[in-house]
Amino acid sequence: MANRVRKRNSADFFTTIAKIVTLSIAIGTAAILIASMVLLGFQKAITQKITTFAGDFEITQCSGLVAPYTSVQVAQVSRLMANLPSAIEKVTAFTQTLMLIHTKEGVEGICCKGVDPMVAHTALEGYLIAGRLPDLTKATYQNECCISHHLAQRLSIALGDSVLVHTLHATVRYRKLKIVGIYCTYLSDIDENLAFCDMRLIQRLNNCSPETVNGYTIFLKDHVKPTKALRDTILGLIDYDLRLISTQRKYVNFYDWLAIIQKNTTIFMLFVLLVAGCTMLATLMVQLIERSYMVGILKVLGGGDGQIYAILLYNSLRTLCIGMLYGNLLGLGLCFLQAHYKCITLEPALYYMSYVPIYSHWKAIVFPNLFIWVTLSVALYFSIKWLRQKNIIETLQEG
Image (cartoon, rainbow, N blue to C red; front, side):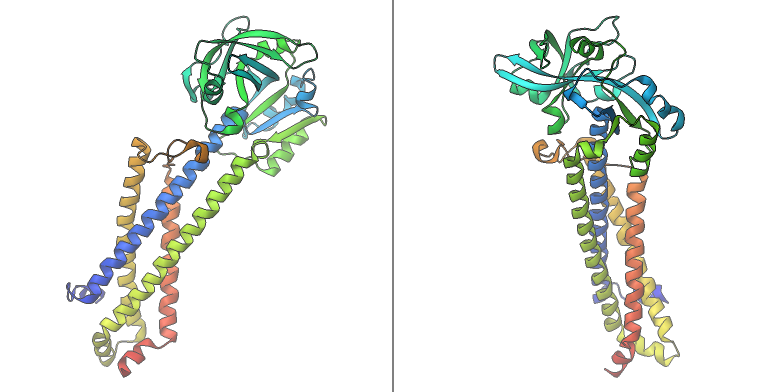
């Protein structure tokens, strides 16, 4: 019956309205799908940048950089991997010191972080735009350094140049370091402050033994979130005089920015769904008004209100499914083009990315579609219920 009602006259007014509604749902579905994949893309890309350079948690002495000779012993953190093998991917040691770089353009202060030669740093290599990381394969440390693109431009440093640096300790130590790599993250807190060299070089500058490190970086597995419960568990496994810093707290500005983006995206999705729901309600009203003669005949032949509303619901759900299908094709097609060709670029100073990121995971596709389907189906159900309470069919018969 619903199919015959729909195919009765393909040139009538309701068919035109149905096409408009289908187009509206398709555009809304595509917009929500794109917004979801872009939002998750931003969250994934920025979080991955931060955790690559700083891990998920950082263990240091409570004195921090003020007293660079203080160290964290291996025995103080060895219990972590043994007690949390399913949550922690690796724990790596690091050393760090504050130093000044002298060039013809001026003097710049940086935090030089020594990377562990016993661990592979393939994730860091992914952010290099020129050169390489300091050579960690030699038996002794090399006077090499990797700086950010921001610092290289600011100080007019090119790949292969040598720069003079000195520490800020009471006993000043000088070194001439060769710039062997340049990285770029577009995250100001990292690019403006952080450089990398061999951990053994920092130990020598700090006049420390090879066993002395300034802290440990904890990297969690991909499926594990740095929750407060996990933080409390880690705190219970390390010594009382150690400080555990979450990356989300250390780089709170970026996570606050992501929270604002998520809030704006949620509001946008709700408005799109509100418009789509009102459009579906208007479509039901148009069907009733345009088919008022058919409604009267069905009532004379003994058709109940439930049967008439079931016909309307079936046609509306069919329109919803067709609109969502076209919306998925449009949204996924545009996301595919952006993911592979990076057609839409961004200002890195504002968005911390040079292009719009796309997170093409099945969850980013299935969950938005389920959200749209459930929301609009519920809206249709309550619309039908509202129409029945208002006795729209009896009103049309009397008219």
